Length: 142
Image 1 (cartoon, rainbow, N blue to C red):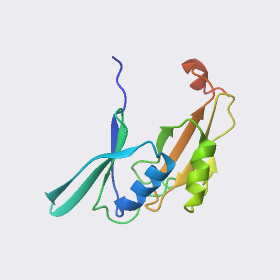
Image 2: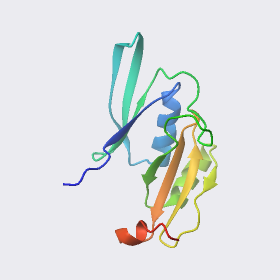
Image 3: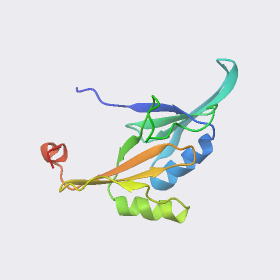
Image 4: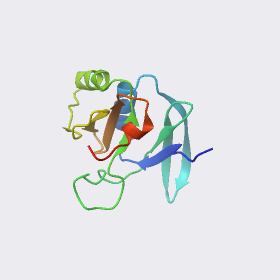
């Protein structure tokens, strides 16, 4: 078996905002688990696993301030990429709750992606592939 990313863990100041964003964009995802820690390095913390049976995004409370801007030079996550069946469907659902595309990826014959920024300043990239051929999907010469 090859290694793959099962989850990513992100601490934010307003987890319910990121959860609402993700569950609106991806209605097939669920809160597959959650819990509370009374003492997470001196403060309480509520964690949520948002995703499906294969992978998830762990969203945790207790973050201070906003996620650093993806255009800046601060260390940290710049964006989370999620493969979807239809970017147009994602855009439609997110537009209905007030989110607009922040920017698009460059032109590519076998994929396209749109980037959104949630209320915690977390950038999410949604990627739609037009082929199942992994070589074409991963061609960076375009």
